[in-house]
Length: 191
Image (cartoon, rainbow, N blue to C red; front, side, top):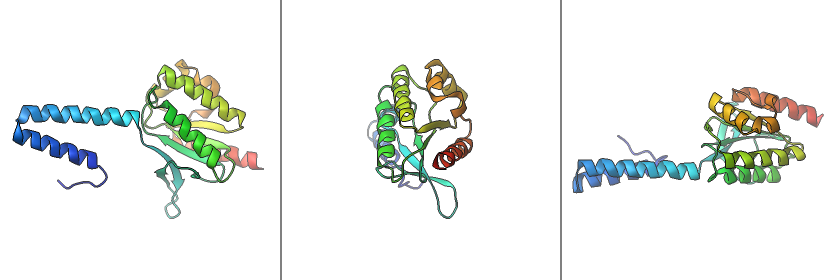
């Protein structure tokens, strides 16, 4: 098995597990591997990866880039991916990322599409903050749509009254449909 430069944490976990197996024993190695793996999972939930999807010039496909000031998908549109469930410990990251992207975009942002493919659950605290952020963006005339919304997330959005604020028509099962609707909206706003 080759070392993967993209996952140094997994390589380190494998080394520690192997050293524990050799130095102490198999059962202890398994327990160490489980504990470290759970720690990595919890850490990722608290500090999830976030990205802006941008169109690749050659393939015309949306490719992920890191969230940073001045990044946009295209003029007037940001497609944002949050790679974890939304809960009390990470929802501020979601809000801060959106505020940063919108306030530093080179062109006024008319639409934000949230790629919700990794979001399967929203807790109460995150829902309260999400409703506040959605209302802030609506006050700035920014349309927000969610794409790749699975049935579990949709149920949470209904239960936490996010759908009321977002609007039923701004929730999509596919990302490309949400992006197409956002582009259409942005074009109408620009005209």
